Image (cartoon, rainbow over all chains, first blue to last red; front, side, top):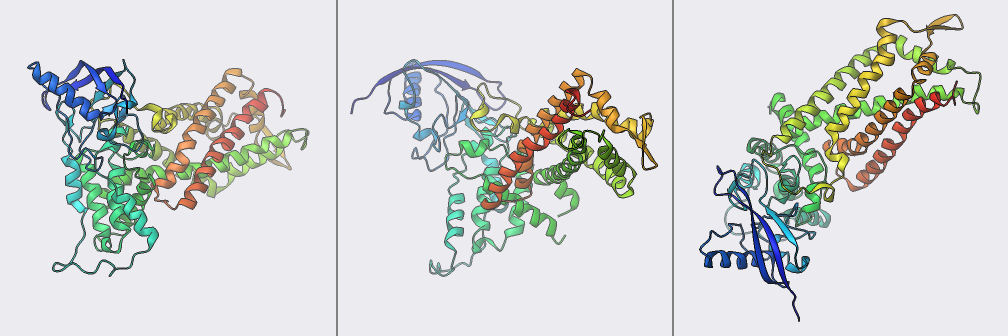
Length: 254
Length: 235
């Protein structure tokens, strides 16, 4: 298989720490194979910067298989780059032409402060999960997998919501920096299953309270989150989250 | 959960926007229906109507106690919708202090869904002008020409409309107001139901179609009124 090599201009956000103001740095990368992933292109750039005795670009990555949700680059105005239903690590350089200029920014939201360069602190998502993204189960041996009957459609919908990898692209794309698509995926995942019924009301109330406390905005149903989600989490989940919250909030005992 | 916690949460605030918005949508149906009575004067119906049906309908709205009480509710809901809308806009904007160099723009969402505050402001400016043209005169100044049908004296709102819509700039401003309303409704109608938690796909399909239909038909009926008056279709 023949590959074409590309020369690109990268405009990359550089920021020393969360207090630093930060600015764009321009880098030239040469002979980039179009079979490389976007992150491998950054590896090549960083190797070159290290060899030149310069500071490499800091960015988040882990599995590089599109399933962990660690990579988080806002490329040319779109989280995870130009492809649909895709993470940055699975974005390949064949998406670009020789001579292109690519602008790379970190997720922008006050709830996701920049740690360094393109790496942001997404621990707000962890705290939202801690607030209610769990179920109660008996300890001891795991019970038989088919012990609890679940309707096929509900299992499918729950599974589709559970596909959320918590990367934060929804927050990055939302004009309100709202985390509602993330929350709606987590709440739907559990609310649709019998196992999630125990904490059904407290879960949604506590998770929304934590989301508000973390400084995410409110949802205005624009749909930008759904359009950029690497796991194609549906906006329908947000409507389900709203229903869960309204019912729980309006029927709470206290 | 306290009421104060519920209504100040991000979803609680949207709940208020949704309910007030739906009330205002219901008001638009009533308003458009009453005002469409001016079209009774079209030659195809009754060229000698001269606004009689419309004036009687307007008189009924102004003279019926239940509707006058609802009018207070309408103003309350208008104020709540406007106040909450601006509050949400300011709060949502404050969640991202450093913006992007390149924006997602229309790749992820419709421009009007991102511009509800701007469209709402245009509608508000139009509303102030509109209230000054008709409502203030009919309710407080009482300086409209009288007309008598079957021994009952009432305001000749039809004549007032003809006078107001004889000015081209007024017609243009009204049409622009209706266009703002159309785009505001194009997002607001379906968004209101999503916020209320309607997630069943079959209802969402109906509500989305109904929303776009409503956003086109109702502002179009409104916009046709100044245009019809100005062009002399109804006289």
